Amino acid sequence: MPIHVDIVSAEGDIYSGEADWVFAPGKLGELGIAPRHAPLLTELKPGEVRVETTDGEEMFFFVTGGVLEVQPHLVTVLADSAVRGDDLDEAAALEARERAREMLAGRRDEIDIAQAQAELVEAEARYHAAQKLKGRRR
Image 1 (spheres, rainbow, N blue to C red):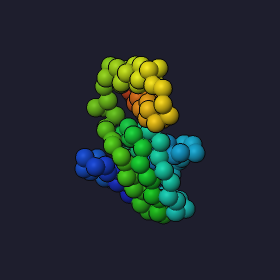
Image 2: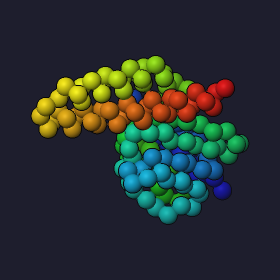
Image 3: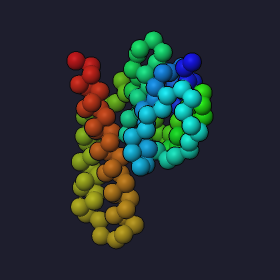
Image 4: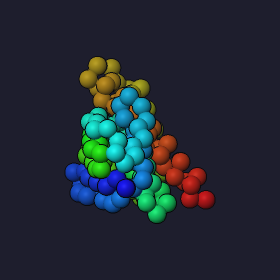
C-alpha cells in the first residue's frame, strides 16, 4: 500500500500524490519514509525532498525549511518555501550564495551575522540541489 504525499507552501500546493518512498532533510539528518512509518513531527532544514512515486518516477523539490508530519499512510511537508527541482536555476542559486557570503563578510553585529549565516545555509543548499539535479538531467 503506498503512502500519500502532500507538499505545500505559502505559495500554494506544490505536489499531491502516491509514493513508495519520501526522503527529506530533517534538522537532525536525512529522513527516509515508507508506508506505515511511525508517526513523526520534525523541522526541516533547507534542502531536497525526493519522492519516489508508485510508478518508479523520482520527483525532486527544494524546500527552504518547514515542518514534516508523518502518519502511517500520509506524509505532509509544510514548507516555508518550495520549488520543483526542474524549476531550480543553478546560476541564480550561485549568485544568491555569493551575495550571502558577501553579506556575512561585511556584518559586524550578532543579529546581522545570524541572518547572513541563515541566508548562506539556504543559498548553499539551493545551489547543491541545483547541481545534483543538473547531473540527473544528463
